Length: 347
Image (tube, rainbow, N blue to C red; front, side):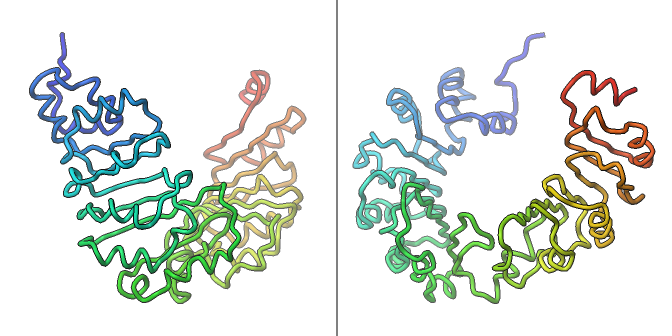
């Protein structure tokens, strides 16, 4: 029985389009029939112009209807920005804009503002931006000139940029009343640290960075942890520990609420005793999944832990002892590296 693609409902076609680029949508489906043309012409497009040829760029522009565009991304250093940044025809339809072209270009704030001010419905702006454009006062003055009600933006700093300034000082201009009290917008510097350096008021830091969103936590005890604030992660259900040795229970409990942990990964603790394992597990009453690097012959798992992962199985491991020790296990995952190892475990 033959089947025609255009018989799909509009909703299904939209779901298919969600996985395709703007060029692919036009190239594959435009001008096949009137119904598909009508559907494509009203489909909200997220146009990504990064790393495409001039031929594809012209092809997209030929079929593109400005009112379709809800998001625009471009970063081609060879583009003529004086023409590409002519947003007059997008001023009332574009709500999302990403500019990842500014690291290698020398643009003044006035140049950027000249074009962005035309986008009266802009809600989201992402810019890969130079250090000399991180000025909260300038951005405040720009935002006040617009009719934008919701304006989110993110500064992406190139790795090529060397910080010669104190990072905290860079954020000072975003601690003014406009940002924190009028708009309730905060700026974060997230590279290589948690919690991120931010303009979040100290009384809100626990609620935002610790109490609410962190469910999976990686603790690396190879690095000093003395500088952690006196806050606890209280909703973590998956805990990954790494380090030469296991720190004290009190130290771990000062960082994370162990009562919430359901999965514990100790595969990257290099030196740990059976006593330390049992002591830690006594403080994690709701644990049900435990992950080890290797099989530990003398470790007898508590009965309430019914799921295990052993990342490396060795031929020298005592299989009979393993079966006795883990007889109550309901779920077991073992990474194997050979057919012989698989046969040994199955038998």
